[in-house]
Image 1 (cartoon, rainbow, N blue to C red):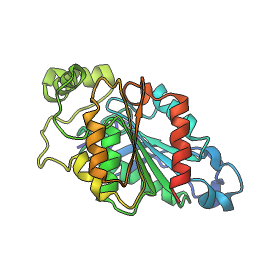
Image 2: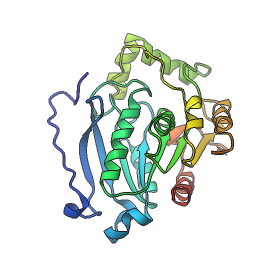
Image 3: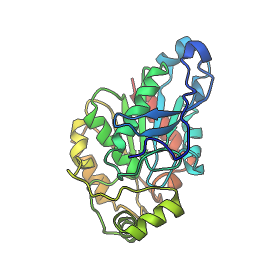
Image 4: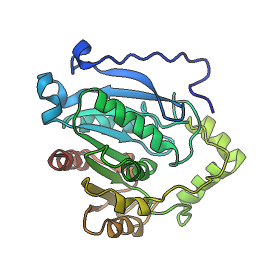
Length: 279
């Protein structure tokens, strides 16, 4: 598996706060635990103030994008810009997406990508980390919190599936064609800048609904639109039921799917929730 984009020389531009100050935006490539190079961006956002207060007052949001997204997509940048009013923000491209190395495993080993981003956020001096994921990224933040307990202070999952292999809607049938068929993977590579792994999951990873009970005591917020064209409302309700009263469920009237459908008002409410719940 490639550890970086072909022909690209990876050089870290990250410096600790004592050298750069909290106000410096940073872009670099992070190595994951399995050796994939991940395109990573840090923006101080609301952390532009006395550096001595940064870890105490403001969280850092780690934003996990949906399938075929990447750190430079306008909808990802819009999410980051709104959350930056509440704290620092780290964004990154999952493996196989954008300038990151490797191939997408559609939610399986992407947990390692998020783990690398969360670890780097901690190393930048932030005591509180909130993960915010959309669609595929929404499933990743749930599984990351379950598999890496104690590493995050709050979890927000937006438009996530509850279970794997769902094909009950036309958009999901198209997605499965892209992932499982050679011609579909060509469309993913050249049409969506997404390189998809050709092998099936083996073993099948922990599902989102199985992950949810393991997240406590970290606060959990599940957000879903009642006009989501990918995953109907039984998915967020399954996740909320699995939380057994620990998580909150917001069903958003008129909302569609993931980052594209998350308006400024909703993102602001998510930021407010995270600041209040993350300690």
